[in-house]
Length: 358
Ligand code: AHM
Ligand code: MG
Image 1 (cartoon, rainbow, N blue to C red):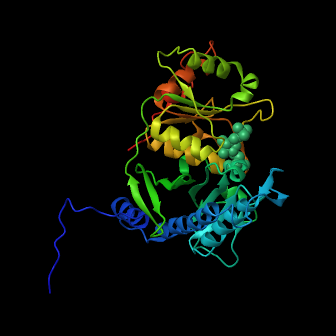
Image 2: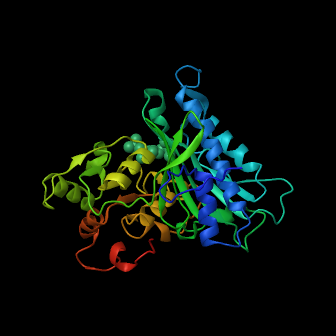
């Protein structure tokens, strides 16, 4: 028998499953593997969804599904498919106690699941769905929370209402020119590209760091006249090159895609309060929190304009929030415009707290 000797510089093909297991061994040596099994349910559901997205024009899965979701928005057929895929793939994992989705009114629990359920998963199954029918990038966003020890068992939603700082893991998948999964479990941010031939997510972006500054700002400019004054002044400052840097604008209208660019290239994404959405449009639990966790882990900053996103206490599952997220340089500049003149240097998210990053 010939024994093959692996050398240090041999290329390593690292799948997301292997990576999660390695991380678990490194950071939680007593882990049972349940957490990795939950994340594998998420990756499986996103592979099913990406297959449908890729052939959407051929399979009669474009268009609306004929019903509205809990926010009164028309559900797209792919929204429904992606939601069902996640509920199925996670529902059969014993350690999942509760699921909550953008597409459902209430939290979902599972018959007969006693003390085994350790995890709560909240997700936006298909973010940016207004872009589906025009073949523009969409994505899935997820957040993993621990099951709290004490909660009102007659109201599982109450267990879901935890600030983002308690997240155990978070991630997203962008269904773009390639399908990319980005996740953190609190030890840096890692990106994997789906190899469509093999059907596996392969490590392609290890330990992603958000650049300290960028050249893009990303905002729905059509709403700008309804933003609070500080945001309008900040955007004006960017356009005039007030910081000494010349900016370009980029706005896709899919948070995952706009954030993915911001993560890799730096800059800032903003969805401030508007006339139509005075409390912000994006959802705290399954949009802002996972994005904020990833941003902080990559060295960036995320606020609601007043405080760190991860410190906000959700009041309901579909709690909305303003979201500003990006590189430290842009976020510091923004802080100066949002800070009331009467309260200099107070409450500035960048200076108030220094979140742990790796
Ligand atoms: P969705 O989850 O229903 O798709 O809505 C959220 C999307 C985000 O992806 C995106 O950042 C935002 O809504 C775009 O909103 P607008 O069209 O108002 O700019
Ligand atoms: Mg969304």
